[in-house]
Amino acid sequence: MYALVEIKGRQFRAEKGAVLQIDRVDAENGTALEFDTVLLVGGNGDVKVGAPYVKGAKVKTVVDSQIRDAKVLSYKVKRRKSFHKLIGHRQPYTLVRVEDVIG
Image (cartoon, rainbow, N blue to C red):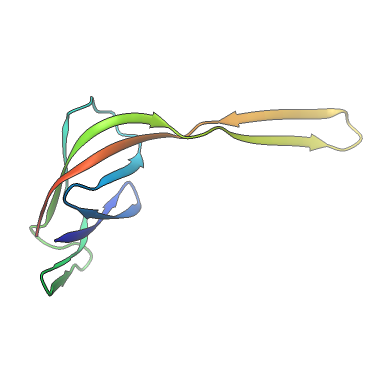
């Protein structure tokens, strides 16, 4: 069974045992999270589509770890002004493991 779940404005396909990389959530490792914004539930030849969400459907997850992505560098230049600026950014993410899909 799988589900299409919306987390912080982004959509993820969740299956039991899958690890999802979602935008950072303030939660300790091992904390259980439950998402009820399920857009679609499928599997076993049956598909339920929500309008906008499937009633009674949930995705249960557990926080695995907090990570940061690779550094992205942005370089700004203004011509003839002797202006150069280097900006670095590392996006924080949370890894969650899907424990169960209830639909």
